[in-house]
Amino acid sequence: MSSRWFSLTLTRKFSRSFAVLCAVLIATVSGCSQTPQEAVIGRWYNGEMSLRFRANGTVVWNTKRGLAQGRYAFVGTVPRWATEGTIVRVRLDVVRDGQTIQPTLDLQLVGTDRMQVTPGVQAQTQATNRRQAVLRRAQSETEAATTATIPASSTRPDTGVRGTR
Image 1 (cartoon, rainbow, N blue to C red):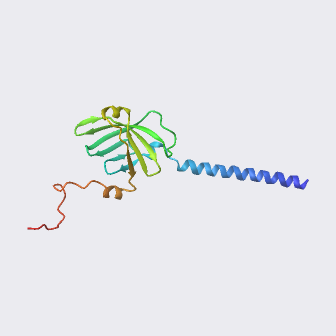
Image 2: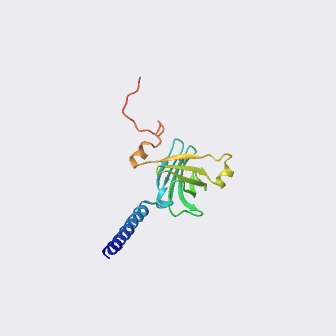
Image 3: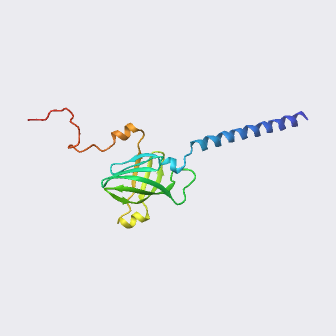
């Protein structure tokens, strides 16, 4: 009889330990997960463009065509959690050089620090090629400042270096 009691007690302890372990694991995983809306927040850049998504719904988009500022919104079904490979569609409503443009971009998360940007279907009809760009996440405001475009020499402040006469 004592062996049966011991076996039953051991099974109950294992069940409780397993339940606690599962609860801790679920809490850990859900605490680390982000929604796609949270995952895109920040500055993303490469040598050709820079996108800065802010939590308040504003966006700054800098390309060779110029600086565009405005708002962004997620379009269509947005997955509950952002994982590698998650694709979301974002519509920008921005002003560049006094003109309002509303491009749609498909954003695909590639790891935690890369994002592939592809013009959406509406933008594809305006552009003949559907070019993809992979952007890197700026890690801090310091990195964002050091990777920013250097102003033209006519607007650059005097550095104090003497030129040749």
